[in-house]
Amino acid sequence: MTNFPQKIATNAQNRDLPTLCVLCVLLWQKWHSSQSKIKNPKSKILPCLLLLLALLSRPCPAADSPYDGLGEARLENLTLRYSPEADKVAGPLGRYLDKLMPQFGEYLRDNLRKAGADAVGHETEDVTWIARELALPGSTPRMTEVYRHFSRQWYESLGALLDFHRAVIWTDTDLDRRVRAGEPTPGAAWDPARRAWRPSWFFHVQGHVEGQKQTLDFLPASPGATLEFVPTLIFTANELKDSVTAVSQGRGMIRLILGQVTDPAGPQNLFAAQMLTMTCHETAESALVENRVSGPGRRWIAEGLATWLGLRRVGDRLGPEMSDRSWQLSHNPAAMNRELPRVDLLGWPSVEDETATAPKGDLLLAHYYLATEIIREAARRHGDDVFRQTFAALPSAAPDAPGKRDSPETFLRVFQKITGTDLRSYIEPVRQQLLAGPPTPAAAPAAPGP
Image (tube, rainbow, N blue to C red; front, side):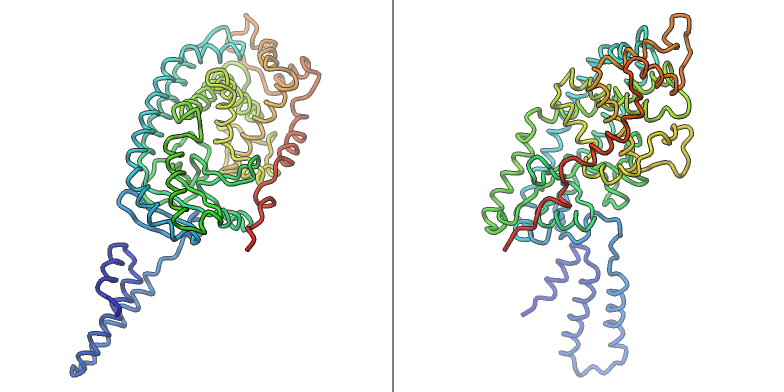
């Protein structure tokens, strides 16, 4: 026999108003049928009103929600979203995650504190290195000010995100279907080397966000996008055939993620790499624009060089693997390749000249991506010193030219004189090389057979 009061209590706890209203109607009808002697025409009003309320209150999913079609379980500390095929493991794994998330957040905050202390300890060394790469006579107070501002902003903003409110369980078949349909796959990234899906550390949620999140305004993101850390598990269809085994495997995955066995460098170095890349980028770009190259048309040169210098600094300090990892986290190749055909580096306006039509979201990130890859390619061909040589040969580097800055055209002309090549000639070959990279899941994985 249906236990309507129990179902009503459960749906009230889950705030499922449409189902709650329908159950109330059924309960009313059940009670009303047992009171057949009551002849009151008003007795039909309540079920009609409840049914109307159920229809009007049925939630309309946001078109830009990255979680459309996923199941949901509200737990004590977080909300779990999961692929429909994972419904048998969602309950036990969700409860397991719910207990561990507060401990995991504190573990990451401790590593973030260590990364922040590392940035403070290397401030003078990093700023001096950037000044040398730009062929400046020495670091300036302004460079130190920018370095401190962005390292502090990164530290404080990221720390506010380490209270977890959500987790996701995906199946690989669900992810494959979503990619082919052009739908988002938050918390999951395609690994072309392994030809498999892997959890990603963070992602941008476009527009639709549950709960209040802090927007990191120094990250290039679409309007309304926020940065959120979401623990993510990914199962294959075979792993889900035996739900007991799947739960055991899932707990093993969680232990790997929480223990950072999947990233031997550990979260402290991962945080340090992200912090160092961004802080050195902003410091280098500010110093470059204020002392070396300025004017319209400089954006792709300044952004590409600044990111390249940031990644080089991470490689010097933390190793080339961490430099590559930091770059991959910031720019997912599959997402970037979708936008690369529309990237117009030579028409990319400077920040002060931006209008409403300036690139935004993934298209903006793709501009950074292509600009940086062009600088990296030029450095591979001519050596890491080629840009320092170029800066040193600019008229603005002359001892009798304090405060003078050169145009982008002068920079490009000096670079060509040193290397024999026009830096702009790299744009199309590098774009095509990136587009011809490893296949994405839109073309690669096939759904598992029966």
